[in-house]
Image 1 (cartoon, rainbow, N blue to C red):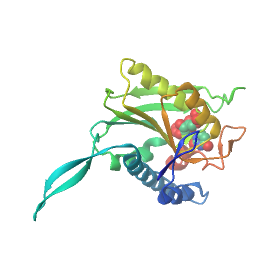
Image 2 (tube, rainbow, N blue to C red):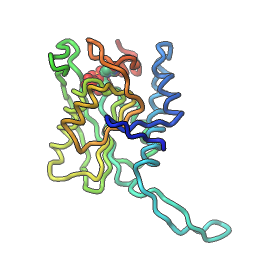
Image 3 (spheres, rainbow, N blue to C red):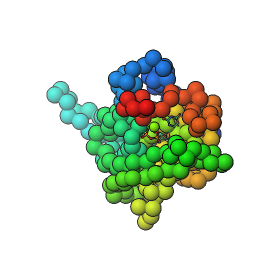
Image 4 (cartoon, rainbow, N blue to C red):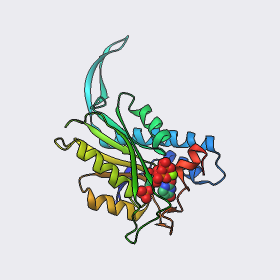
Length: 227
Ligand SMILES: O=P(O)(O)OC[C@H]1O[C@H](OP(=O)(O)OP(=O)(O)O)[C@H](O)[C@@H]1O
Ligand SMILES: O=c1cc[nH]c(=O)[nH]1
Ligand SMILES: [Mg+2]
């Protein structure tokens, strides 16, 4: 089974996802390789979500030689992908290879690193820009952000998504990350019990600056070559 239920989250265990994440973790990985790795990981995660969480239906097909029965994935037109700027941009580029017809939303969210974490381990979050598509009851919504650390960003993002769609519950709501910290998973699960958390790795802990250890450093800085 490529998706394991680990209590805190569902973990995507595809060997290529682990391989790709290991390359992303390496401090020697260059900006270009890092960005390409996030794209690749997004594509693998997309395929795994299709395999593990979406249904198929039988369809009748006429090949050049005979009539036969084929299988198609249901609901691919009812997928919404939310890109949490900025680090999710290459990750979402990969996801879109699996869900090319997805509706897309964008939320620009940043941790106030200067203010730092408060005593409860949360960061102040600045949300600058929100543009979301309409979300319907048939939709599978995937909120993508490669890093889930304290969970402060994701909780703010989910507040915005759910407030802007207060009348409608989507069929499924996934939070997809590459690397998660136990604290962040717990916080999102407590505040949003109806959300399914998907991740490639649950790492060990957060350091005093709110970085995931062992983690991969600052995903936005590594992908965009800022410091
Ligand atoms: O769980 P949290 O403690 O909120 O941390 C996770 C957030 O931190 C990073 O974004 P950052 O604020 O560095 O913005 P960036 O993507 O522009 O680099 C990351 O992409 C997440 O959005
Ligand atoms: O470890 C972390 C934590 C937050 N954001 C990142 O990019 N990395
Ligand atoms: Mg960053």
